[in-house]
Length: 478
Ligand SMILES: Cc1cc2nc3c(=O)[nH]c(=O)nc-3n(C[C@H](O)[C@H](O)[C@H](O)COP(=O)(O)OP(=O)(O)OC[C@H]3O[C@@H](n4cnc5c(N)ncnc54)[C@H](O)[C@@H]3O)c2cc1C
Ligand code: FES
Ligand code: FES
Image (cartoon, rainbow, N blue to C red; front, side, top):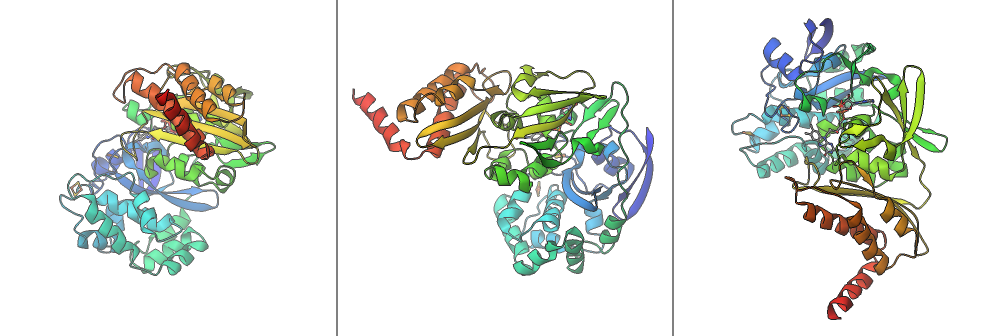
């Protein structure tokens, strides 16, 4: 326990806190701010959403996050905006838009929706209803229905002139805040409070500490975190930069930062849309790349993507460092090559050859906020009818995220043809050992993988589709 000082709405709070206490409990039980609701306590429903402001370098950023998965040890020096704070000066335009569209029945989910939409107005480059819908990807409502929500979003996005909104964000978050204050979306004290926030204190490393990235796996798997080491405050684990022939990503980079980084989207333009199928905006705003790797789920989306990109890891313990190809990191089910106390400091992705393309496929029961039955990531370079590079990785089909090395090698062996596409699908099926579970039978997953492999090759070379169809018809006829 230590004394933490932070701001909740307009109030400065100093409290002795357990670092692993969840912020939703702090708000509801200790501070009696019960507008923030608790539903699932696992990051799935959005009822507990808050806006979390924190100094990052020269600026303060506000993100919508799930307070049920935010450990109190992270909030020293930061600012929490809850529904009580947002509506302190009266009903806001966001609340009015939802209310007038009839979005509110029992109202349990409403604070989360208001917070998420306010976060959207703070951070979005455009006043666009499709972006507003994406921002609500982590919020569930059990009674009203989403048609009225859609109407509420349209009404909100037509309140102001779009060009004026875009302009307000051009010179940074503070200007956007002032613009929103003038329109009573935010209370007037927010910009000055945001500007006055201190830098978060550095994290202290003790022997036996538990590394904590975004805690989006840890706080689902366990109730408390003993002796946590908060990696968000370790500068060496942050940032995305080019370093020689590599793109170097800090292990503590969160998935939304990764998705929106201009350096990443410049090299892999497909990623920003593909990553929309991973978790939800508030989870992506916290979940880190290293957390996804160390968690070593066989269906970890980032593990697959980073495998197919040929990544290696820079691991650090004290002053000693080692580098390891990612495919050697995954040893067995949920077991990785990491020494006690060792951290994933950086992830190094070789710069891709010009013309190579990244494909990511995820089959899950729901399009958003669901984990995969089977997922596939592939980096492919096709030149004059032949694959010059092929690296495929699959999830949900083995105890670990799996590099499909035989399939990848086969694809380089001869010109791309319907026969090769078919053989690649069959080879992939032979490389895997899925199990029956709630996400599908082993047989289903095996066949699905074969289809996904053929599917990405056909997306790369669509002219092969009719040829493949002819081949299948000929065989059936014969
Ligand atoms: C609602 C919800 C939806 C989700 N959806 C998806 C999804 O669609 N796809 C998906 O792949 N995952 C999903 N996840 C899982 C999770 O969000 C990801 O695995 C995430 O990337 C984990 O990162 P984290 O920083 O939160 O990890 P944490 O929970 O902080 O840590 C996970 C593990 O990694 C260790 N660790 C963290 N950082 C480091 C480091 N730098 N060095 C050494 N060890 C470290 C921790 O000690 C812990 O053992 C979802 C989770 C939730 C709650
Ligand atoms: S309580 Fe459901 S996301 Fe936090
Ligand atoms: S209005 Fe009842 S859960 Fe959404």
